[in-house]
Image (cartoon, rainbow, N blue to C red; front, side, top):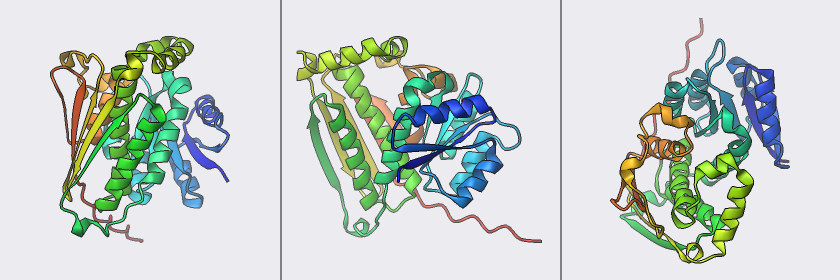
Length: 307
């Protein structure tokens, strides 16, 4: 049996469009809900693998739906669809537990890949706390060629390592995995290969051809991505370095500014800065250091009293 994604949107056209894009992947099946209460009823009957929800809906908003899913189904990842004007709410949804987001104007190019990534991170986040009392510090060091499957495999491996060491909510592990993956993918595309997100948005075919060409052509194919990770029971530090020319970090968009949710350059930075506790770049712009302190499990919410 394949994977199921629940698409929640009060617009019939928008939810059918999103579901159709996901169903292009043969292993995925889309089911639909027109609002938050209908979505929660469906989840109570049969929990999907991923939820995709609009933010602006009558009655229960997308943010309220994220909060309800986090409370009742803490391991169920939620992707939010953003539109111009919903940036502040989108950032709050990420803070409240949404796993990722996709601007509605870029659904065709980004939604399926985002669903795949979030689902993979969710499968990898199987926490076991048995090793935690024994661990003092674990250090990992990798050097990768510009090979995307290896990059994605490394992000998943690090998340799995954290799940075996940290006793924390699965959703937190998913978010950490997404942040690490974003940093590695940026090092792959923008660092080693020097391929811009703007080209992908304007001409996807030309972007794909350029990526394939540079993976086979020096100097781009000769460059490497280096990752150093130090994990203790209370803290994880991940440093990603690429051998590209770098950039001026002062030109990066402010990741705390919600308006950058809709920009091609700002998406990865927003996710990284939201999900990690500290993010810094070196002066050359080819190194990012991310720090995350082990999240604590939240106490269960008291059950509602019946009249």
